[in-house]
Image (cartoon, rainbow, N blue to C red):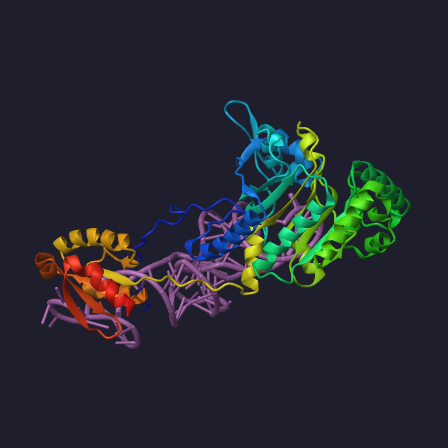
Length: 440
RNA sequence: GUGGCUAUAGUGUAGCGGUAACACUAGAGGUUGUGGUCCUCUCAUCUCGGGUUCAAAUCCCGAUAGCCACCCCA
């Protein structure tokens, strides 16, 4: 006879369904913070050395800001925004990107009366309702910087240089700068017409997607990956040939500045950014690797946006900026194994036995901390054994043990964890004795 | 939003129709107040819900989530 196990269900099936986070968001746990610190601290430091000041703008803004700023026809605004109505009847949106908010703050805080140009950097979460996959989340983080109130092309070059410098400092030396110019409003719309005409004539050779896209956004057809479309795209008119004199000269001089910085770049005539506010210079930073893969996961992007501030109701203010995706950069750093995880260093471990000792240990912990001794503890644990085990995990050089006897005598045991030698010292001398030993 | 793949302890995996295994991690313990090695024990009914079957982690359907592609972007 098969013996039946007695079934005593601990859980009633289905009753205890653990709550999950919503789709596309994640927790950033203690053991990955060092990467975040590394990336953000590096970026902040370099930005500040370039004269940028930190700005924090709200995580949500009026929806109108993004509709007008990013552009009502863009994918971001059309289908990716977290918008909601408040109880008070406002329509707000969780920011999908940082530039529009900064531009709004520029206007609202009268920054046009500050010494020009105004240089700002920021970092924080952004939200886009997309279908998540690797390198793509619904809540993700940007680090970005903006420079407002300067039209000279040297600024474009400097921004690219700053971006490049940050990536370099992060160790991403093989990331490439992809650059293009999409002209100003005038030459771009002229180019769009030209492109539309060109594609209309070849519409039978296009894939269904591109036929559909043609009316909406002809620029997008340029980077379709269908074989047929690529053939058509290869012979399409290029925006660079259609720039007005001003835009043409501007771009030419940006490239000259980059040359003089000896910063290598890839001139990419198909680079088109998905936000409407860009004018003239646009650029992205792609990770090292095959071009096909790199373009899928651009690490960051930016460019000039001379019309944005005016579009939002401010005085005409030329500007440029850049931002990168913190998660993507961290992934790339992990992939290339660039940063070692720092070890937690603790100098002594505090052990306590018994009620009185436990009480004293709390105070001693503070005394040690105030004396700048790095101390670890496991005050909740009872047995000396388990506490020593913990001490071992922390790799401390010494353990300080207060037992019941020591608590009464007002003494403490200093144990050398390597040799196992122990010494009893008076409580008031602990700090001195520990420091003496640590100095050896 | 569309299509494909996947879903087993905290982590990584095994099991491929007869009722869960291994490694690591974590917690407790191996007699009196002493760690690192070693040993013992504990922690999942197999994402959730439904169906087929005498029997399901294993097959089917649905939901959810992850991954990949398209799209787009960071």
